[in-house]
Image 1: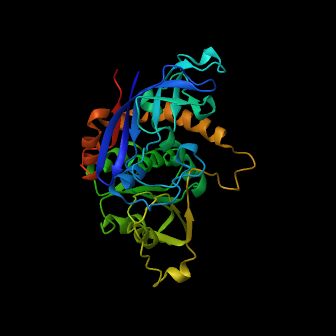
Image 2: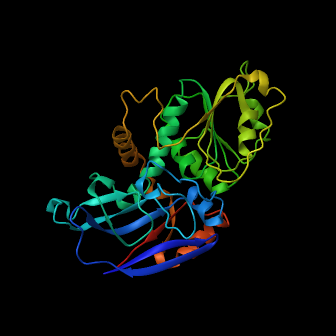
Image 3: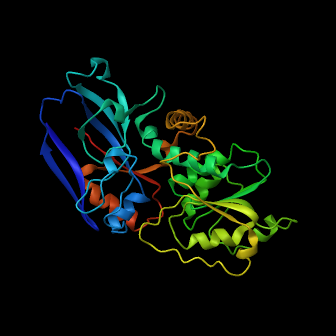
Length: 339
């Protein structure tokens, strides 16, 4: 059996390689045949562009990413497929099960059952690849704790931003405002529940939204991946407001302007990263409970409609080049593994 897999060989250099898989499955593992995998336009583009600090841990809490980063490397964390064989110590009932794995892009792989998440009934493969994004969006909501009647902004309407907007739409907010420079994303943002969406922070209508005694947003999410947007978040946040920083900037520096009124603003800057749960929730929330809610949200929202581009893994270089160029018509890109 041939396994096709993607390697980030160097910045801007993608290789698709092939190797033979041992036909015998190790005793304590299963063999998964991939159907498709989702490309993250956030972290994966940092890897593609060479914007990850070499020597750092990508994520010490995920076994696949617990080693220090260096090229060449396999990366990716949204693969779905079917268990096609099991080792001697694994129940045969696993054969035929549809599964999600935080696994790099490859057509077949061995893994432990404990590192698989079974895809619930009623959720298709192309919805299931959004599980990490939906879990991240759910974590952002928990970290921000929106309140009825608040004015909330989401800066950045990539996949995580759009899913965050869709979850915020279930709250009875006063205003839900989004920002993105790409028109297609702003249009989808309105479909996902935004009350207003802007391409810049200077549009006149911004003033009319906040012509009230409380100036600025109560809660702002920064999920654009652009370090400069953090200053924009500070500028539009009101007194004692909260900014949830969901972006990871890699080795890009963020030069914050903390003069002017910031010193007196009592604004809270809060980092949000999905590997852990806010301690205020950890007494009753586990990763498993959060995954369960994320599956429910995937079933309700059906984010597969955000898939705009599909490529066979052999054309992965084209996929990453298009994402790097930030084409206006791209939302979610997936790789397919037709056998």
